[in-house]
Length: 133
Image (cartoon, rainbow, N blue to C red; front, side, top):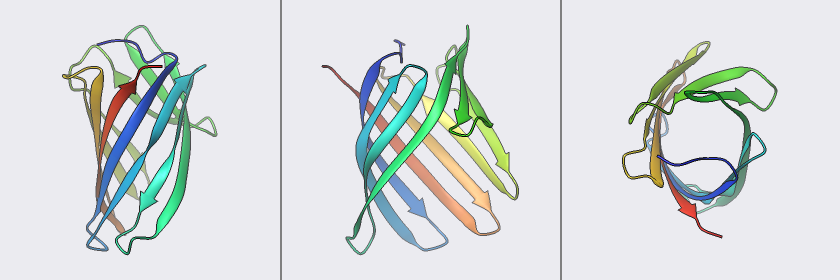
């Protein structure tokens, strides 16, 4: 697997929300630079409405992976870059977030989130493709 530093990625994402019986799509880009993961794009709702979406996380490289923090500094999870298919979880009471990354087809990689809670039941499937500048 290669390096995430100073890279740009195209993202395609499907969100399957079982509580709403809905499928949403997201297309956008992600830039990893200066220790930040910054994502921008468009979410298409089931009714066709389009919404802008952004998110940002702090990515701190370690000798074996990446510590991921929320924008406000709270720890989110760790990506074990020595594993081909790293897994992590995050409990945000009362909701559980579990992720599985797949780097088998690098520089194409995927992330699959499963989110469960009293009012949440959804999956997020994201595919990242490196953009060569």
